[in-house]
Image (cartoon, rainbow, N blue to C red):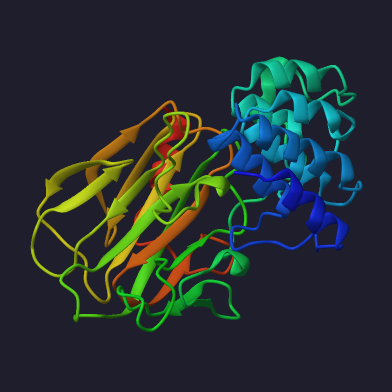
Length: 336
């Protein structure tokens, strides 16, 4: 929860209001998330947020603050930044598109009145990004838990002692540098180059998609507004069935597991709101179909009790072909 006196003291002492945490959020964004998630009805927290908003000078991060307010359905905050309706964030998204994707109708109507872009018509929101950017590498700033991203942007390595003896008690996690553009299809793969950590009885690699603000300790689980972003958990220590996790639900469905040298993949169809997974080029017969797949979704992987070296393939120009026949899938969808 926010504390008004503490906020005033930090601002008085010229605290760095542009500093980003491991999720890429500046302090005002963190304050908005805290207010929306835990203390929307708390008077003290509301007063503290009011001080934060009034005493934080305008800056280059305002568009991100507006996006955070949209994500967490805070129309009163969005109204302060409505003049930014026609601006683009670092991913090429205008706020109006995010509001539509997140189904924030009140905010959308308010922002629409400030829009002077002909492309932003109510009937065609999914296709109006002017410069859509697909994920092409890992976001170094999001890496945590003794996890490092190589200079090539696609190879990650790191190890974590699950008991916290050799590092922080947060599981290693990293997300992609851009979200999937709205209404688009996307697929990426990871190859497990090295895998170690047999000291522990459970080793886990999660692969899937996640919103920016849901990167918590259990990064692939979003706990707000009933959202559950799909993830894939594969126990490698035995031949137990793999578990697909959707929020806190688990589906023990397949009798296979991953090991060093395997290639795991995750596909998503944002328009159809479906997500699925592959192993060594073969699609696994379990598909998530969820209406909660909305907003900005980033590729993400997380490790539990395991050391790894993993190389990702985002399908960028010059990348090797996928193990999975992704192009065949796209052609089938286009013909259908």
